[in-house]
Image (tube, rainbow, N blue to C red; front, side, top):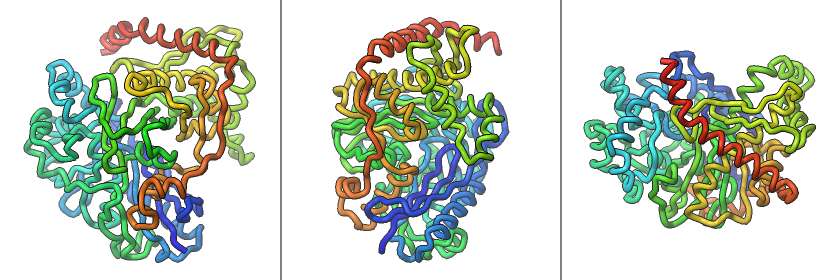
Length: 507
């Protein structure tokens, strides 16, 4: 029997999952990746620890499953996009990784936005820019940490670093690179004009050769086999950006579908053979299926806001429930289910880790009354996260019709209460793909195509993707949620000038 290994390195976890060729989960393991406490606004990770965590997760999956590692037909990696993983000529880290929520390079984003650089180069890059993209981070390092640039031989994304540790070969995979503003997305190639726009032309030699998602990019080395328990010589595919992996895991193989990811980032995406190049779309990138583009609207405004609330205000309950072998998020669901959407007018702006409307935007609870309790606050968080998704989806609807169905993945999809709220607010059915590790499943789908287990992405998704449940919208709540969303938008407009004033005062 053949198996497929999917490896997923997000912002907080290193995961490995083993699948059969029909997409059934065999075993899953994970290790938490701790963010380093460096400076305010920075988000860094120990790259050596990232690899150690990944290797341990793979070893645990193999041990749990009890399979012969030689039966793994192929492995593939996915991971968070952007940030920066610099390695030397031997593939070893030259400094900590910089994560996708880092804000140190904001000055370059402001400069390139105000001096016209962004709009001049957008027809090639097809996307907006933000502080954690490698173009801005490379400029910041040149000015503030030149020794790291001098030591570095290659610029990598997270999953490309992990793949390099597995194979000893250095490549950059197309879907990830096409989301970095470092290339001509339409040509699917590095571009001198793009690099010159960011004043990075001298760093072109640090950009690795580009491979497609389903290209075989090497085989597991003896050293990696010893660390992971994998069989030496196991093929490793190029893999993909995590937004592509979630797209594949939700069966997104044509332009009729819209996929949402409710995780650290709230991503909302669809694919088309024609790219959208517009300041009204956050990012257009190359999709893992050759010839297709992925249009994405997203920001760091999703389920991580609930994680913050739980960590800061419900830690005692978390520990108590853990002793009872229960999950704190089950309690959150119970709290929300105990309220009605008409009970409270609290509006929550989910901007704890970033904003989709202002670089200075901060999280807000608006409309609190003394009679309200924790249930109303948690409901406001659930609603505010969905409203942020809706803000993004409404922008995408300028370029495509509303889909008949939405497919929801990420942490929010694990909650039946939250899933129903997505359906009620968007007023379309919401389908939840089956499985617990959909990023890893997307990587395994890629591995299946790379190994020839399935002869196309369409065939692989048809064989490996299933759905756990569907939430039908409650039509009676349409007007209530429409009014709440209008209040959400009004609050965004009202606070827009206030955020910049408060940021100035804080300085």
